[in-house]
Length: 552
Image (cartoon, rainbow, N blue to C red; front, side, top):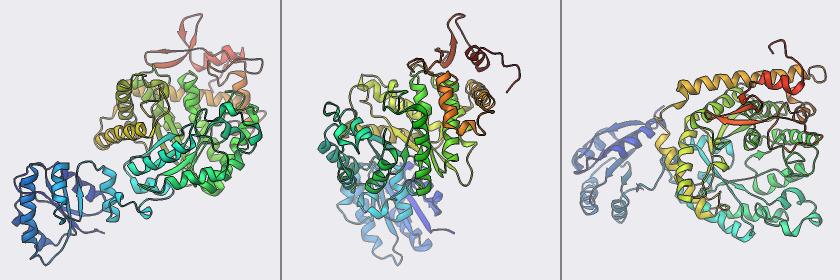
């Protein structure tokens, strides 16, 4: 059912048509009928069409000299007073023209070129521009906001400074800028590990890696700071101890937009906690179940942890499936699959894309009506240069690559990350860079995933990752009826090196032997004795010391 008719035109002597035409395209997508009158349309023709066709909205564009634009709009004001039909009047032009036209007080809505696609979409859906700072214009939960902003991806950025007060003020500044949809609170390690044991906090570590928070009121005040601008959602990483109690605090104080938890990390394996590996995995599974019961989305920020530690692409792809499998098994209904591009940072863009496409295919093979999967992409931290001008270019380039997979959420990485934690100014500028790329590639982007080289690598990774997964199922079939969803099995796989990464410190407990190299843009398992890459069958035979005679 049509929402009404939208008429568009460039008026007077203006022949620039892109703005009006683009707005009409968005209106069609939102269920309106549209009529485009063309460039350089006279006021009289506009008014004749309004009187005859009685549109709901009329959008007029002018992008030339402000003074000439004002003259034409004054003519419109004078002659439109005789109309019997009164539509909503919309104007679009350059900032100097819009500024002069705004002073005339005639148009209901004015777009001045600083607006983004989501501003137009919000207006078409609600009749309001988001800069009205009205909370009811912004969905208060992730799934609702995804639907509200579709097809534009939501933007998320990490933020937490060593100073609590600077963090609180920064959140308000970011919210007022309206460029970010989700602020991920970066809490310091003391808060992650000792929130419920303040006596164990290490004073010298306060503010290390994020903002120190000492009690629930600290979270509440940060949430209050975000109640302005576009009312961004807040979320926070899981703790590395007392994970369920902290999850309860986050839900009650900041309405945690989603839970982010690694399956295999934040424990003895990486030193970000002292929990034994299997115990931390079981707690992660409990945390998934806790949020699943509450209907809160969950992200397992797992696959990129392997890539950041230089594991080969096969393990990262298999880890994507293992993550999603566990989330589904333990009751998660809305699953956020994060795909970190550019790790290792020497991978080529084409091979990186092939890896992510394989990750997506395995992850989304689990999707059904009760398990919804949302794609979240990001640039890799090691990818960005310490030269900020270069880093800005890298951020834009990585975003263009990410847009190939049509992300629902883009986790923006501030261009300053190679030098220092992102300030509000850096976050706002980084988000604007990403928004510009997203706007330019949202429709009609060249689809690099159909490059034959990408497809070949994509297929190869699917085959190799499935081989690894089947090996795990077969190897542990006698001790578990569900090896992929069994914390004891996966932790044993890591200890034995079936799932391995070169950066895992090898001890008597962790016995992997994996070596990797980036060659031809791919991160490959490597045999240093022969100087050649090896496939999973060869790697696993060398690791286990037994021949695998039957294809798994």
